[in-house]
Length: 326
Length: 284
Image (tube, rainbow over all chains, first blue to last red; front, side, top):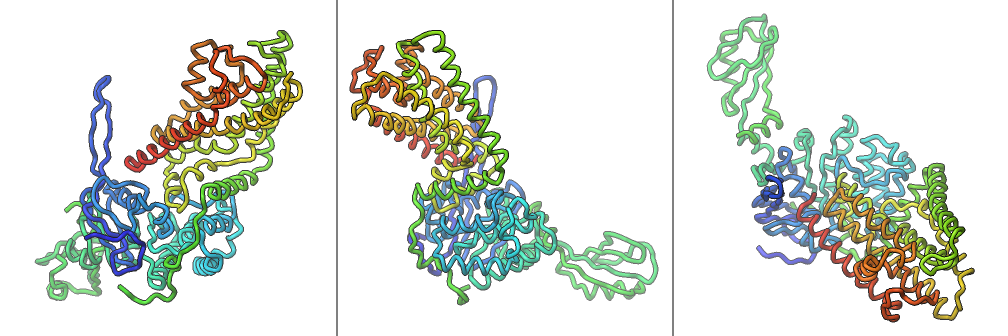
């Protein structure tokens, strides 16, 4: 697939990686003068195509190549091999042009000016990204309203809480109306309220402005609440790419049946399920995802007096864990 | 996909010109200066100490000349002129370009990346990094020494000689600026070698402050041709003060400063580009 290098809005993917690879060469001491060269493949033959307007969960264990690939997508690192286009541009060659079309939030590292009021950092970005005045004012008002930043605009960034700062960083990354927003751990260390505000905001941004969002996170709640499509990176390449529900089905971990018996007793003995935990009259049974839950409940009810039952799907954390180990 | 958006993003009709090198530098430096001004007391204190340290060196020269009437053929006022041009050039370059010194820290902390995702040049952002008005303090004794030198040195001031004074400073700032770029390039490649390069820049500053003939012929050759630091003030000063070069280099070399400065900038920019490329391929 050959691509034009003009930043045009088309139906073509906004991020397109073809056999993208990144190899690091490390020199290790081996003896007095000898240096041994070892190569590490941080990313290998990664294929990814993201359509404009998607909200993508980009996950994987530490050191799997997530941040290396994001650094290539944002024009920070050059690929060792393969093709890469973002918004129709080549990230390294067209770095400055690309910068105007993407927004980046590194969760733990703020890009705001530490000692100056929030407002000043925004004013700088206004000039740096040459955002037209009217557009800047409109965007600032909109994000400040949505993220409840109004009372904080004149506060030095160093005095903001983590959640407040994250909302400031989000605004800073969006004032120039980027087509793609990369978020690295945007909810890390945030309290429940801040998390909710940030998540709601991202969903709205994606829905209303069609901003493509690539979300890297360890908080699988983020993924569950926001992303339909999930890409799992493992060992430098795409281990899974598809819908979250399909991921759950594919890895198919056991479901859990929780039963409350009339009286405490020994572990329930029933074919097709295994007791994993007993707590007084309450027992937890694991059974295969594809098994018939109704039949299982009936089988138990036939032999024990049941007060209550509930069934839990495997949570995403378990799904991912199974995928990595599987 | 392809849902209609409520409000189209504006980038499609993006026609504004992005800030150039100077605008980027000014924007960034202003932010840092304002950050520094948040801590006024600390700034005043460090300004006083760094101004005093620089003045002590000046005092040292006066003490030495209290015992001898000339060193290496230079009188006190001539030495002050020489010292003044070197110090003024160095501390002006320090004021403007010394941000490259913080690159190693940025790379270590991972904040260098945030400079790379902005739609402006990397080098002007780096030059302006941690800019602080505090660096104005050592300029006071430097320009004072230069002023005394200009006033008292036995110079027959022709128009050309007068023009040579700002010229000397300009070449000096340019040469030191190129050295700061090399410092930055080096720091990117060896992220924690900040201390090693300090010996190059501050050492160079020390050397150009004293008559070059004190350092012996081989070292002088090295400085004149190996490191063009001599052009910071030695060759132009020989002209202004009407001294013959003890080395006997042809007199046209006294005006070759711009060529050396340009060549050094070319070299430094190449090194900078190579360093950025290296960083991009290693990401260290």
